[in-house]
Structure formats: C-alpha cells, structure tokens
Length: 171
Image (cartoon, rainbow, N blue to C red):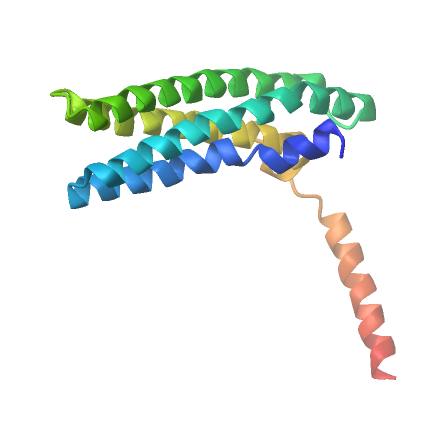
C-alpha cells in the first residue's frame, strides 16, 4: 500500500467523525446527559487524532499523483491549502473537546457554555471538512469540478456498443 492508497483509505475519517460527534452531542443536549456529552467529546478528540494519518500521507499521495501527470498542480495545491486549514480547525476542536471533557468531569460552572461552544465550532469544522473533501475529490473526479461539462460522445459510444450486445443476445 503506497501513500496515495493509504491517504484514500484514511482521509474520510476526519470528515465523518465530527459529524458523528455532532449527533452524539445533540443527543446529550436532548437527554441532558453528561455521559452522552462526554462520549461526544471523546468522538471529537478521535476526529482530531484521525487527521494525523490523513495529513501525514497527503504529501506522499501528492507526489504520486503529480508523477502520474493526470491533474494540474493547481488543483492539488488548492486541496492542500483547504486541508491545512481543516486540519488546524480539527485540532482546535479536539483541544476544545479536551477542555469540555475536563469541565464536564469536574462539574465546572462553564461546562455547559463549553459544550455549546464545542457544538457550534464543530459546524465550522464540518464546513471546512466538506471543502477539503470536495477539493480532494476534484483531483480524480473531474465530474464534480466547477464548470465541468459532459461529453456525450462516450455515452453514445457506450449505448451503441450496448445495443450491439443486446442484438447478439437475441440470436
């Protein structure tokens, strides 16, 4: 498994885990359960930690893709810039979650404001996670790039080929 393969295998975790954390934190607010909120804090911390292997494998994945000459460096650079912002915000969310976890365990007076701040900040992180995921997807999925056009010639060729196979199947 090379860096590009590893990056593709782990890069979804830091995007998905904060979403799960939001759902759990919302459950903690609905049920007014400190234990459920603690679980959310742990999930946010896990999300922050999951950015480490994704970020660490990004440089190697970049080198592999650039050597393949299948995409411009500008597209990769845009993903790298957005991902760096997302990584920093994810680490910040993990830090806030650590503070919230401590405040929750110690029944500090600011435990509730910290849990609200964590929840609100997690939406910022999820927004940047979405941008990082989209710019990463654009590296290989040209169909999601802004201004992408559809070339019907391949589709028409496929339909013609498919019709020929149907004709032979009828014989």
